[in-house]
Picture 1 (spheres, rainbow, N blue to C red):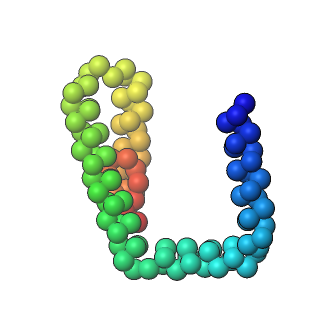
Picture 2 (picture 1 turned 90 degrees about the vertical axis):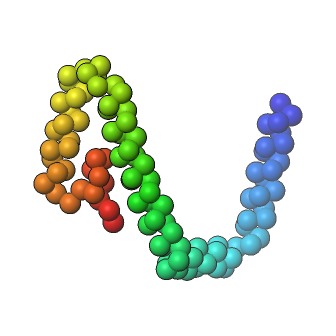
Length: 101
């Protein structure tokens, strides 16, 4: 019960302070976040992280599929193959069907 009251008190204090800051402060924070997101260095870092994630996911997929092998039920294996076939003709950048955008 004590934790619930502490949470409710924190919520109330946050609400009061947030309403005092007002719409102007909210718009200022939103503008700052948009500027950070449009920064070329931030965008390059995010793209690099996404590419590395896709690379690691592809490696993990191949490692798991090599180790699991024929233990996967045929229905699941057929589904994975059909997904790979569907994306292989498109612009897919990896085994997961995501593009490298």
